[in-house]
Figure (cartoon, rainbow, N blue to C red):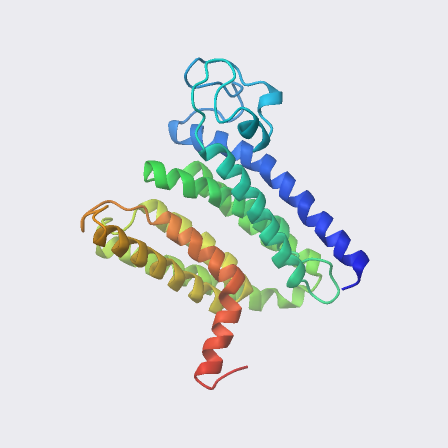
Length: 282
């Protein structure tokens, strides 16, 4: 990569990151209002203590929270650190996914055509992650939004790629990924009568599986395995440290989401490494 290309790439990633933090600011509204069935459009954001409307100047992602030292300008009530964290996390995730899209771009393309879909899905998953951690639920309003979004996004990615002859193979792989995820998650939900995980996890599973499967079935398998490894690891840690009992309610959606991102970014390389270890490298 030449120096000029490096500079352009850096500026692209910085721009994407800034836009991501702005989207993250909106996600904070989604996280706060959707579980309570409130509009995400109106009214404007207000302080939960003094009900003062937050001005545009005090609503700059991350920067405003720092300048205000995490307090309301009008009543000095504390502003949750969740706000800058979600904004920063969204910006970082947009940068990571864009970087992935640049690295995995086909030879005749600048970026991977899945990029528009992935940054949209990633943003929704960040909101779902935060909501599930706090309220132990994955709202249908967000999960169902991902169904048509994913179908349209995959078709757009295929159109941008320009090779419709690959559609049958991609469709079979995507459906295989969806079947794997919903089969395992749905099977556990049925077997445990909803005690191991919620119905929201079952509804979210096919979306995560179909996107990973579109890339490869191996990515879908690695992502699902990572979700269970992470969930089991954190669960055991909480039990050992006394922070949760053996029957404590633990949200599993966040681990599905983390497993999805792991499968997306590292799934193929982990699978190739595994094949190399057992002597079946491609």
